[in-house]
Length: 511
Image 1: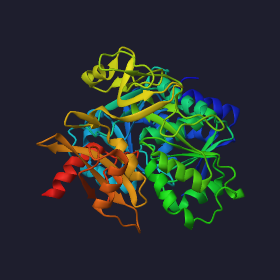
Image 2: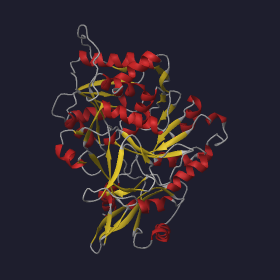
Image 3: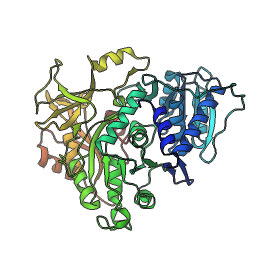
Image 4: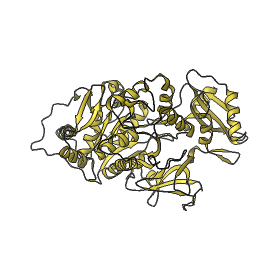
């Protein structure tokens, strides 16, 4: 089976009554049999509206039953789904609508006003279909085509057009085929030994690759189920796991910190509470997880945290630490899984273990190309190897360690400084909730090291205290020369801090 449609058809035939999705905000449950019925209906309704095979179909919504049904229904009917980032600014959404050539947008009431203003600036007709979480799409009244048959995609057909966060310029649209999406789901299933008995709690938006692949595609591949609240809430995280007996969840470092902050307020005896016995692991991706935070999680909650690596262009997971009792390594995103990973130097030559270079990936889960951007596509590949732009190394055991981004390197006086090294130190301070080091222009050194920090609620610390704390760990040369305290740091939809936006914010704060 190598398409989304094939898995939906298979499970509806073999386990039609098994629960596939639970939407706790309604509440409602959808079985695999109901999934097929609703997905087929979405495809036929799009046929009646005249949207042909390969048409680009967007959605602007929070998580929930209907957002997920539309996401799968569009792909399963041989069309291309274009998720719109609900927290993005109007300019980015306008760019995606313009660039993607989408024909129709599904939108929920929360975002209707925002979308209406944006579409007014798009120089072509785009049909808008309103969606309510209780009743689904409010379809325009059009007569269905006679003897309409459900479309079935091929494995090579494009299924998902997902735009990158655009931290270094306009977002690029990664085109992922059905084959890549199915392979991405398999990588999660195999890497975490998921079965039909597993149930995921999805707290990350499905308009991002993590939510879309890890907690939608993976349960579909394994025949498991997913609990899909509309949005993440630290207060409801553990009660949802208890109520629906979830066995795992995919989170990001920011969420981990939020859950740690309120751990003492939770009505659970972590490590001993039978209500949480079902929950066997959590996984972290989308942003680096400092080792100190990983240890805090496991010490407080007594639940394994599996650090992984995934990218938009690779349909999610490419590396994962093994499941217990196999060996995990702190600060590593684990072993390559479902694809090949190597380290190349500046000449495109493979580096030996322990030597830093650019991380490159090869596998069936790679994007086909960047939409309408052949230059970016060509630049992203060296032969069959996708260039991630991440810097790292493989150790003697094959574990992958990420040390930074090529474009994020701080070059101070000719010396390369990986900002994550400074981040990791700052995260060890009790008062730090979020931290990101960055380089800013400097007349003497070319670049100077500074850091942006969000303090944890109820904690205080001074700039000098944090500077001294860093200097003791990494030395004076690498330590931030200035600390900027902020209420929040700019992030992409996955929760990843957009480091390259920080110099602009720093400049604004200095005016």
